[in-house]
Length: 174
Image 1: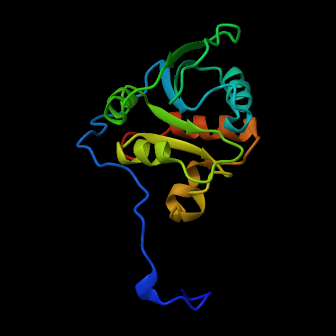
Image 2: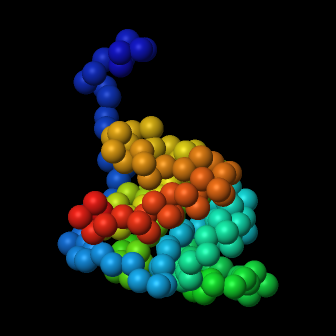
């Protein structure tokens, strides 16, 4: 209304967010197996799984990668490398997703373009640590202290640095 001289009484706000469930991460401890969750079909290029896979190859830490999608996924058995265990999930309800999501230590959103990520909000609302690409639409609204959790798009080295930052956090810092 400020830019287009629209009558404020004609403006309607449409809620665009998540359902609040009483589901939250109770405790954090990352052991020898880092459990990472990602959302989206690996065949979609904008999801930047190639960046994620390159980063995990460089990481040098054992990882269980859980891939969630809202569509049926074809198995990614052809993608395999040392130190990474893949687990794929076909569509879950929102509540099922949130419960299973908490089995992970970290949520990564490597997208090269994503205007608004509901799954990022769900992960954050559940108390999961997150790392997110600089090309995700919500990051410009992050407060300064959360910007430490943003990595440069298409920069696997920077993502590895951010994962190591998470691995070296003390429980008090997390």
